[in-house]
Image 1 (cartoon, rainbow, N blue to C red):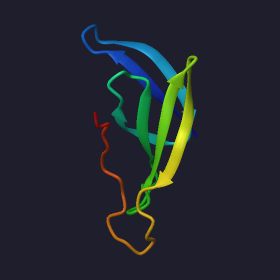
Image 2: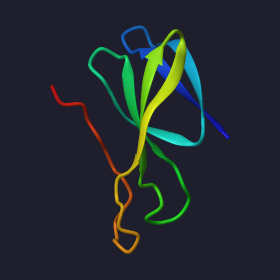
Image 3: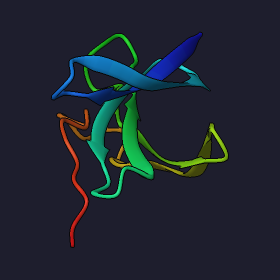
Image 4: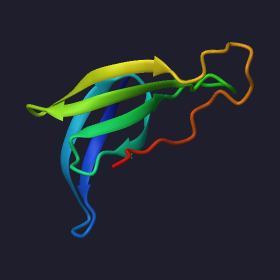
Length: 88
């Protein structure tokens, strides 16, 4: 499956750009300069959406920079990632 990252101009109510990427991903955060996004993998079922990825927008494409398991303990409950943010 493939997902799409939309860059929108909220003031004008328009989609400015679209960037396709592989996988079912849910956006969590966009960097202040708009060049990097954090997404989590969308997997059906409780405690399965714990994979987080960092993607960089460059040369008109999304490029995955990093992927990690946010909850490495397979026996832990509430492993799903609910949010993320970029810190200054």
